[in-house]
Length: 403
Image 1 (cartoon, rainbow, N blue to C red):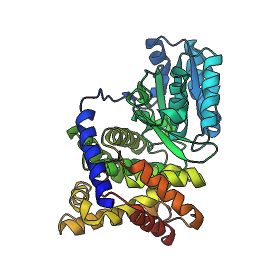
Image 2: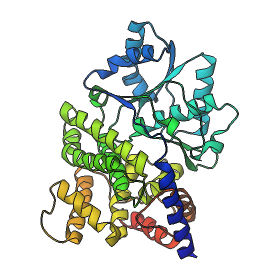
Image 3: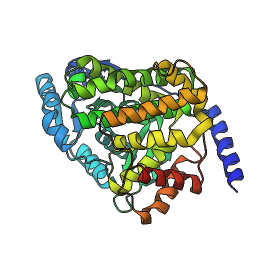
Image 4: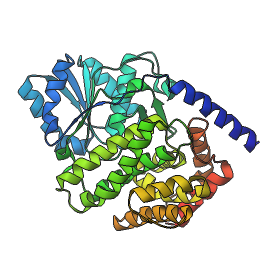
């Protein structure tokens, strides 16, 4: 039965790969550099937006929201603010954002924050243009089918890549199941990459979101199909950027070169996985976010080295090449180089005080985690190794054992 399923998944991915090459892929227009957020009013005027909804979370909204609204005030652009987006945003939150957008006669969105505000704003925009279609009905691939209002993404973390992706991940308020809307129309029109917006990011969040970017790049690079020359190049550049600059940003939040380069690495990794896909790391991480509200970047950071080791020989050649690119193990066998790469991920996690595992996973939740992870990954994700229930359970138990 596993062999038949695997054959179906690989056939599905091969056919999708052919079709995907005919789709109108695009990247957001990047606006980068120190104080580039000051250009937001100019972008809104270009899009003929006279009133905009700023979507953010409570902490970022209080700390950084005034920088955006001050620019809007100076430019005479009307706005309203929704600042109640939680981590792992819920369907209920999305519906509240949509309601505020429509009731205030807004014409565009600014998403300020990490992945949660961006995902919530994307989903709300999708609901605004598809008022008769519930979020759950748009879950999956290419089910939104309608152009969004002008959308500006302003990341305050360097990691989620949401400013460049086709995805919006939402949590069902009742079942706690996380699911993704994935459509080309969800890619923001502009990505404002202002390192000043990440200057005050706490070291702990800098670390987790930076490892999130690394996970995006590595999983995209390891996909067996969907990749293009551009996505491979950007994934490699993102991996090199994270290895070079993440710990600098972690140690010194005022290192603007490191902050700038991490935003660029996140942007590149975001496009790489948008085009090439992710894998089993993300599928398992999403179950932790849904069940335990685990921050997505933290979950990815912990799970990444465990899954890479579990993949074994299937990914050795590619991991060996990444090891060479970042200056690890210049000599030795492919297995030794691949091992050095995974070991360095573990070492980076340890230096940044990221745990090696999670001890909060409850035994009763493991069957549900397995079901959700396999349902998410298969058949869409072009993973290097297709998991069945037994192998997925083995990985989850390793996550617990390494805590």
